[in-house]
Image (cartoon, rainbow, N blue to C red; front, side):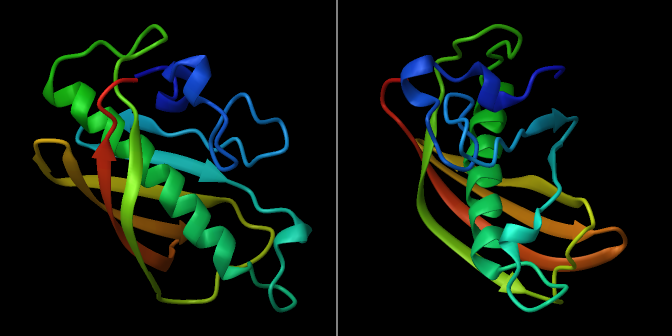
Length: 152
């Protein structure tokens, strides 16, 4: 997949603060399908400081939220053989629940890597397990239950 899943959302559904391409004030997170997993990268700026040298936990949750719904959409496309090459794709997901477990402080000034792995697809419910790392350090894990919108 050469394009980020978020870049394939319909314009009417691309305003999310975390990942919407139509929200210039947002994070602009981009999730890519890479075989059986998804990947995204983000470099937090100083405005996301919690304690000196550490990233605010709310940003971590926000990144996992957007990476999770993007991953869910990508995994649905993969499962249903929907091409992810041109916008708009007919799949968009929203968060039903999100759990985040913080494993270590998230260091400021390091690029963060998020990965996602499909747990299950049951009808409109998609579960994805995620990890957020800074270099070799695992900083947070999460799981999302995403719901596929009826119409994208």
